[in-house]
Length: 527
Image 1 (cartoon, rainbow, N blue to C red):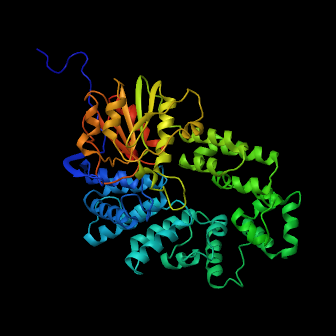
Image 2 (cartoon, helix red, strand yellow; image 1 turned 180 degrees about the vertical axis):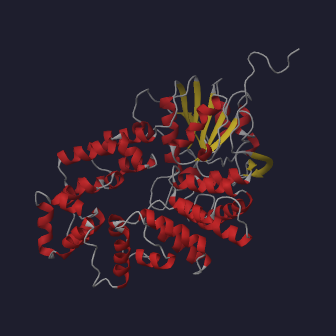
Image 3 (cartoon, rainbow, N blue to C red; image 1 turned 135 degrees about the vertical axis):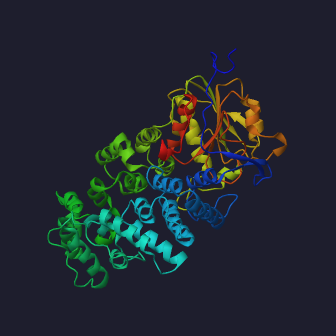
């Protein structure tokens, strides 16, 4: 008699975020689940802005937990840790956490005397993706571990320098505000020019001269950007605004690598309508998004505004910018003019391209408790985890075939929406609901749905109500999307139909269709 190979039997796919079975307490005293070291580091890393305080943890405490986990796994599981750090800086788009993680990876392995797994040099090189990041890594290392920089760090930085340094990056990032200038880094790591880039030797010499002999430094004659920039800087102040207002002014500023940040200082005057309209064509997409209020206040023309809006809403530009979806919400909240609203709505939609269109009936629960409101996403953002949760929960509900969207805290209630409605409009219907009773919210709103998705920091208060995931039948998948990376989870993960993932981008949602297709959802860098 067949016991297993029978019609209707379903595979039980696994996700990688795994609970150990050991019980912990959440910060509010609720019963929580401990996760293994890899799972804890992954969830912390994908939600971690270094030195950023959250509602329950100080910035220093989170940094210490992050550093401890990286150092432990760099020795015991170097291949996995290197994969995490490379993915974190790439698709994960979290630069500071990956830079700090790479430095601690190297330090732990040097201290332990281990050499297996991905090389220290390669890990350093792979997390440096922007020309200012070699200086960031050096500044972190010397401030935390002292001025003696080991060879693997120097060699990894030298590899990155050869990839990243060019005339435009020199103008943008080699500024007096930096503790480590390009010339300092070249001296310290002994970076030789790339033999496949014959122009790089002259560039490196110029970077050294700019640092040590700025009064006599001459840009390489063959570098058109640097020579054009030099010509602009040599113009008398009284002649500079005429460049901006001339017919070819925008092209001349672009050819000289003039950024919008540098333009006001160069003009030594206000960034008026003419100045903005001259520099807008050479601005990056996210620089445009961040400056919408400035454009309105300067009174840029409707014609220019239309071109800006078209670029912001262009799906290729959104993909290239690799920005988190909540950046568009921030712009929407701070731009006074309605002429940007439709473009920002479209850009937000493009940034949520990975949100799946789930079949059947879906219950989406969005955490709107106090801890979600009191934790800003970064020091430079006024947005918080409650905002991020509402964006992702709303996008899930709008894409699903049949969804109930619920906000919860001490109480819970359904958030009404219509198919095809604006995400930004729906966000205005969410509120602040106090404490966190996840279990009661699941119990109250689960009505034979095909799946449950909970977007939360997992710090539920009412432990007497038990595990929130136990309110759903064992054969129904429950997905917890953790936006904070605290140590204790509100329920088990890694077992049949109980899955946890995390992060601040929509890429995490790729796991849901994989799991429902009975395929294991591997770590993102291994998929």
